[in-house]
Length: 165
Image 1 (spheres, rainbow, N blue to C red):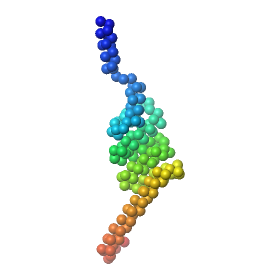
Image 2: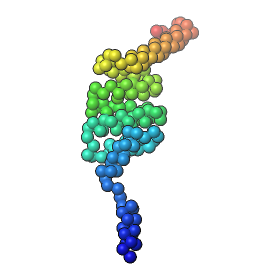
Image 3: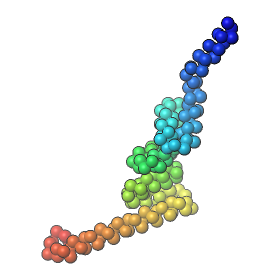
């Protein structure tokens, strides 16, 4: 009888909700170590919902969630996460760099260039930021050249139209 009672108590203990501290730690590990971006977004969001999370932990969770969203192509939400991280830690070069990449992928080359320049202001030896700033500048120059050629063509087609000037 005691053996059966012990087995029942053990089974009930297995069905009980996990300790909140253990659950928080499990979510924290999943936020930092999860390979699946969708699962990482969920785990990091849960970590951010924890009112006891320290500011540094929030920054890490926002960066991890932003990285997951960036890898999913969800650039607007990634930019938002990096922006929130920067409000907590304004000189976080990871947040600045990754936000620059998200802007670059959206085609917002001027904003991307500004983020990469901000990284370089903090860390002048950051070769990746230097490389991506140059890429953003190149894409801005190419866009300007295309616009200039288009406008030149329109002026050539209608040289008498004063509004073209």
